[in-house]
Length: 393
Image (cartoon, rainbow, N blue to C red; front, side, top):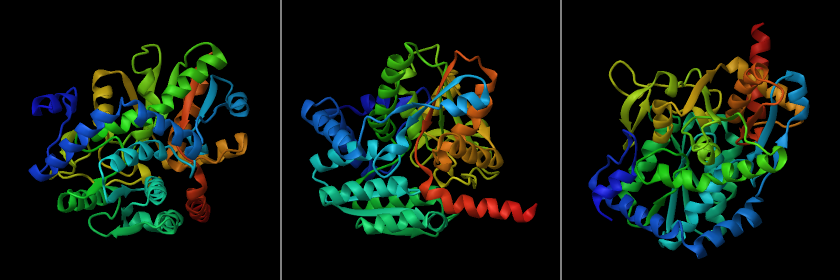
């Protein structure tokens, strides 16, 4: 494949691309050729579908949130239950696809980055299943917030490297993973967890995560006979959201709504810039460096976003909004108490916005909310946050 062709494929409007050192570009070009070779290969896709069913437990339900809908008095709310996947998050969809690719490429070692830990856990799981060495980079601050997931990764046989540089969060973990890949690209596959990074990763992650919207679109037509008025998902790097949006992008009557933390508002306040080898909307400080961010959800704590999200915003096809930490904590309790579903703090951002949106719509309107993960990992963290809040009041 020519370099011009690769560059064309690597862009979403003016966003995307691959701005990396030559030796890393060589590795990325090889990954791209292998992805293009296998993504439409019948044997590869049959194996992917087999593991999605027998290991992940797909397809997962599209659950009508009857109690929540009645409580709000507006639109009908359906929950796409990625929290019911094996190990409790959407991350396994992409991880499974990439590990099958890595296996065909003969990789002896897999590395990954993680924020909330769910991608790290999913990567450790599949590496254990396929007996491949696994190294996970995680910000030191995130290892403290998500200690249970660190233990899970280590239990599964992965080496967890706590990164103390910078803010010691997700961006810094990505930095270290990319440095590792540059040094070890001849025998190492970087299993990137979100729809970010240099080409071909945003395209590859979307491809494997699009199973979310492939299912939900078919399910809502079976249940309601029509499409939703809106699909809502949280956005950090953007993998669950791009998967939830993918099969609706060409349906102009369906609003695509991404929700991010107000203290990591990349889509709202970001400007075009290059981060981690690709161009996207990015939060920058006064000196032009990636700006420190904060979210109570470790998986959303990133100063950039997937390049296709930047394009969807710029083109007007998708909408992006912010919610506050207080709104997220209220939504965490609301969904738990009305539906008996404890969502991940990341997913709860989408729930928080939906609590407002549903009231503005009619009772015949339909909203699909992507519950990208379950909240087991966050219960202790939320307990501490609520305790601290009560002590202050």
